[in-house]
Image (cartoon, rainbow, N blue to C red):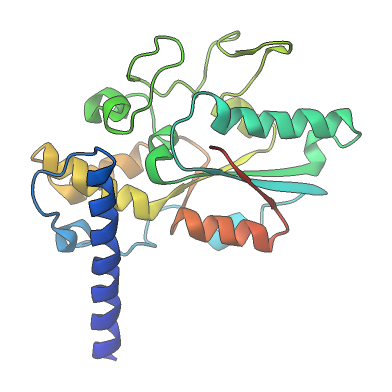
Length: 235
């Protein structure tokens, strides 16, 4: 049994090493080799202190279903697609209560799962290249949490309610990748000379209400498709 566990740990470290290398290529600074042992010291990649992710998957209902894969900030599109799916289904005879929409926040999109106070503290706007649609500068808040009426407009359509809280009110399910939280919190902690476990804990404690932590974004996409969700890449 021990050799199986050791092999699993080794494979996980190799995989995460590749992720860290990718982060460097994408411009996220890593000042020294990441201590992956510290990143996972007090938890497993599935342990999140959140509800059972399998039970969350079973909440996916509806006649028409889609999973929206959000890998990075991309203006309003990660949230607009969910609203468009609901609006156009309603226009063709299926009310939103009979639709199932899952939004998976993974990779560089994970800060959208977090409360406003974490954004300036960890410079999410700069680290993840997430601009505020209002200022066009690196965001110092989560612009899609409890937006003001009229914050988001679409030409030819007008005001659109695409805040995360507004979409949740329409039945949209949101989840966030625990793998990405673990890796990126360790990278940010290292660059800020902080403890990786404490930063990760802070991020998890700072998640928005109603957002499910899942083992990984890929896990969630797979489970959603097993529940007959069509796939949409948010771009």
